Length: 277
Image 1 (cartoon, rainbow, N blue to C red):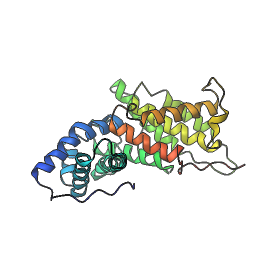
Image 2 (cartoon, helix red, strand yellow):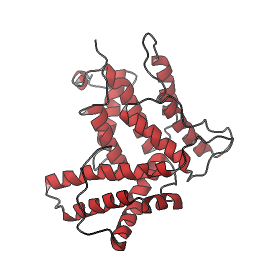
Image 3 (cartoon, helix red, strand yellow):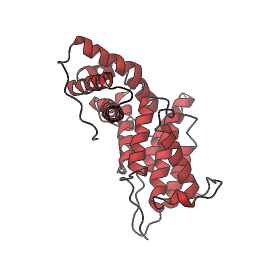
Image 4 (cartoon, one colour):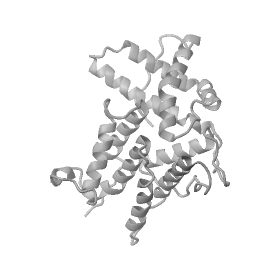
């Protein structure tokens, strides 16, 4: 992912700066990433070791802290630069999990809460969802029949989200019913969790936005009916736009990921390929 270039550091990384970086990571971003990906990897010893050993990410975060410290709240350009820099911070921290082994968890038991491979696979799914890409294979396996009720639903949610990303449009093949069925399974597993609401809304926008012009909201009826695709798209867009605001998402991670989705799917919407005709 692109984003703002971090400023040169005023002085080399030292123990004090590294402690500031770690504190910011543990108190703000690791918590947000764990809530979003439903994992405990980011605050586990593996996650902390991945942060400590990645000089580039530490320099990025130190530059972000330096930028924030120097920026006056009334400096619009400076605040925008810091916001753009935070995109890089969140994304780089999210991808720390790529240091984990790339494998598919199999078996009849759920992996540990801090399993790196599971978290890595979820990050891979999220990147594909946001970029507009599709998956050739599902890196996740269905949840086992037995286990903690809430975790089984969690694993089913992520599995079906990945299945959604395997459904590609094909010439002379109508995949609408199949896609709607999988989206329905995803929706049944939201369980009031903010991250799942956000991810489901991303999927809805990806599905429906290509079918309508960018200004479709100008022709919406006064009262929205979510059984109508145009209304359903409007509701999903409004939710993601709200989540991207300072007063919206409950964590910096949700807000930045939602803002990335706004850019990707709404304005300018470069990851949406609209259907012609």
